[in-house]
Length: 169
Image 1 (tube, one colour):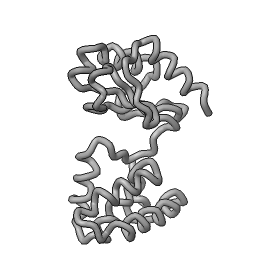
Image 2 (cartoon, rainbow, N blue to C red):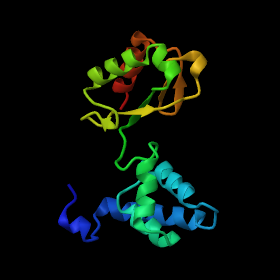
Image 3 (cartoon, helix red, strand yellow):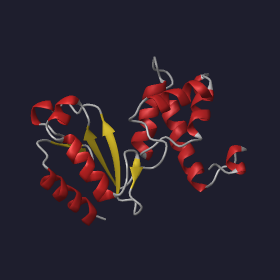
Image 4 (tube, rainbow, N blue to C red):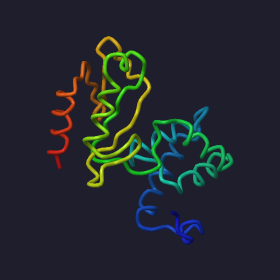
């Protein structure tokens, strides 16, 4: 829940440090046609997520409504509104991967990590995200771990990949 102070516009240290990143992304991209998406990508690339206070700053910088900016952030699954874990695991949910065992991988991942899609483990190690095609259909089922694509993932291989992530700081 957002505190009354946050709704009123006050910032904490995290907000203050991210404001410079947000303003820089706006300044670097505002001249582009359709600048909203490049700005959002730049912010997420630098911070790992789009902070809640970013929408108002972007709206002001691009002369858009807050609702327009928020609508884009919430529409695209790739944008996060909270910091991800140290590692991001994306499981392909497209038909080819489902037909080759992605549903069993999903069940195993959720049980092992104790989280659902869009959540992060309590220790902050792993965020689990669905993705609706990784373009690796010939080698399905596929997962992407920290931007590295893995194909022909079996349950046993998945266990090994997750164990290696859990062992990393």
